Amino acid sequence: QVQFVESGGGAVQPGGSLGLSCVCSGIRDFSNNVMGWYRQAPGKQRELVAIIYNVGNRTHYANDVKGRFTVSRDNAKTTIYLQLNDLKPEDTGVYYCNGGVSPIWNWGPGTQVTVSL
Picture 1 (cartoon, one colour):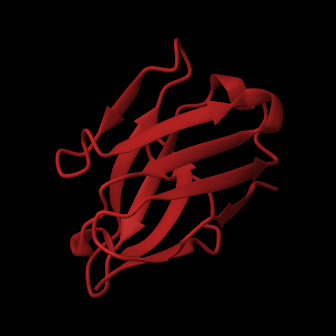
Picture 2: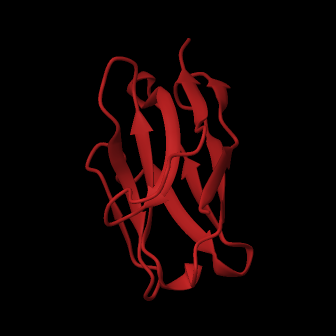
Picture 3: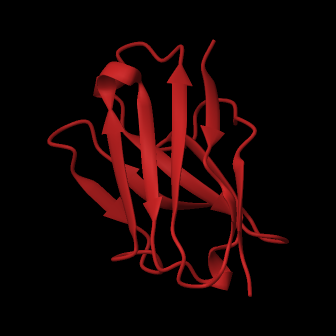
């Protein structure tokens, strides 16, 4: 059974930074899976914000986070990370990880990020 445990969220002021982690368990051959980070803002649908591929650690970002967020992975620890810099109020939401091509597994609990003065 695939499970995700996200952590590292918190409350910060605009311009602040946070580092998120997602421990992924139960994924067979984790290193060959494209993984992604998703965000669900209050009252909005969940959206994909960052992808990390299984070859060469190539990455892709949503336009509104490009240059501010950095996704990485540690295959030995079956963990993916998301570094959030220069945070803006519109980055507020619950952050989840799942498959990067499509969210094919059950969602984890997510981790809350709140950006406000």
